[in-house]
Length: 70
Length: 88
Image 1 (spheres, rainbow over the protein chains, first blue to last red):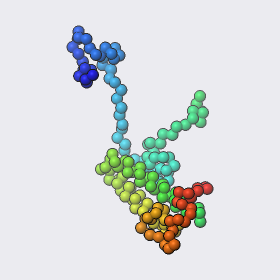
Image 2: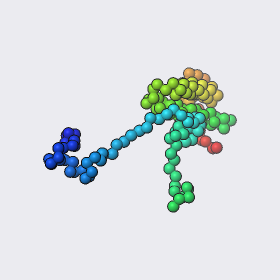
Image 3: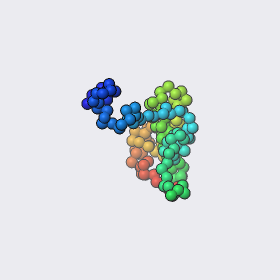
Image 4: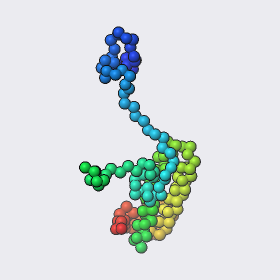
């Protein structure tokens, strides 16, 4: 199916949009990546310990029970 | 003795990791002067650390990092660099 098939169709015409949710102005999911600043840089030893040179990228997975949550 | 050897290897590993991180950052931010400066500083530090290691403990890789080999051939001396166990 061509991209053009997804464009808005004049009212009254059958449209492929009927395959999507009823709200015609909704958009499909969009991915994005923020530009990373050169900031908050670890020392080499700290970087190896954390698995990243950048403090902003430290996002360890923790068991919920370790945070006192249920 | 072994602790200093381990510590030097750990330092080389840490600086190499930092250099790879800067490598990846610079791939997408090639104009960042501060990152380039830090990368160059780490690269120089890594080269110095490897030469220091080889001068004291023997070759890290078969060709070494510029310090060559004493006779008898040093590469076959155990333990291999990757077999040094961290007992800390």
